Image (tube, rainbow, N blue to C red):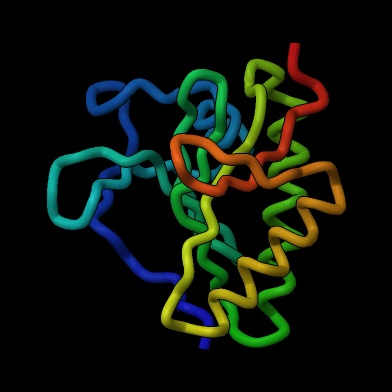
Length: 151
C-alpha cells in the first residue's frame, strides 16, 4: 500500500508566522494552501506542505533550489501514477512561473514499504527522461532537475 496522505502538525502559513517564499506565493496564487511543516513534534520548520487530490508535497526554497523533502501519493496502486504525472506537471508550471528557482532536487531514501520505493523510482525515471541527473551533494545522492527557464 502506498503511504496514504496523512495529517502532520501543520499551521496555515500566515504573514505573522513565516513569510512565504516565491514558490509558496506562486502556489497560493494557484489556489494551493501551503502549510508550515515541522519536524515531528518539534518546532523545527523543515519547509511547507501542500495537498493536492493526487499527492502531498513538502518542500522548501533554499538558495534558489527547490528541495523536495517529502512526496506522498494520495492514491493506491496504479492511481499513484497520477501522482507522478501531477507532480511533474506542477514542477513544470513552477519552473516557468518562478525563474529565480535554479533547480529542483530531492533524495530518494529507501522505504520499508515497497510501494513507496516503486513510486519514487517511477518519479525518478520520469524526471531523468526530462533532463534530471543524479549528483553527489554533501555526501548524498540527489536527483537534480535544472530549471531551463532560470535567469
